[in-house]
Structure formats: C-alpha cells, structure tokens
Image (cartoon, rainbow, N blue to C red; front, side, top):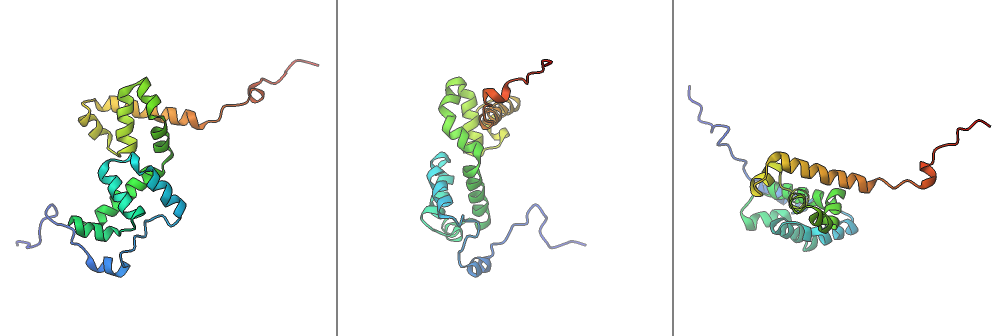
Length: 172
C-alpha cells in the first residue's frame, strides 16, 4: 500500500493567513511597557544588521511581524521566533555586560572578544562561531566560560572590610 502523503522530511508548514487576520496584526510578544521597548530599541545597535532591522521595524516603527513576513515572503512564525530571540538577548544581563566591557575584553584577549561578540550579541551557536572564526569548539567554550566568569565576578558585590574581618576568639 502506498501512502500519497508527503514524507516527514518533505512536509512543509503551511502559512495560516486566518491567524494573522484574527489577531489583526497584533504581536502579543511585543513588550507592553514603553520603557522596556525603548531600552530594547536603544540596545539594538549591538545586534547584527538583519536582527537590528527586524527589532527596529517592529518595536520602533510599529510594523507588524505578519506584514514584514508578507514583504519578505517568509513565515511570520520564524520572524516572531527571531524577534523573540533578539529581544531576549538584548534584555539579558550578560549581553549588557559584554556590550559595555567589550573594549576591556578585547584589550585583554582579542579572540575572547570575538567569541563574546558572536555569542552574546549576535546570538551564534558555539559550533557556528568555531566554524566562522576557525577555532576549535573547546576554545570557543573556554572563552565563553571565561566571559561567564567575568560576568559572575562583576555581579558579586565586594565585601566590606568589616564583613571579612575574623571574629575575635581570644579568651577573656
């Protein structure tokens, strides 16, 4: 018996225009707080050009994702996923840390700065970074862990001298 349905590898997701018309082009994933949206738009310069254009078009210019997908002849779902990933990166504290300290990281180790920029700001995977920069996956992972350590060290508040002083245990 032969099955006329396409194989799972050939199956494609069909666009759902009824969903876009029901929602009225409203992107529910958009930050509702104006300050949060402004903060994301201000940080959009850290992204690669395609993600920057998407974030600015949706959050600054107010275009809907479904309208952008129609112009690009793409799927609204994939654009929403890209937008969500870009906004999540821009609101992550590690990304802010890397963007603000990239000059110091580059002065200490230029390769570490390239890895940090590609991983935290551009959102590439470690394997893609290793391929693009001709590094081993182990090297990329080591640089990423070093940046994570720098971020964690910056988060911990330095203890006051009184808090680090040992208690007096002499017999009285």
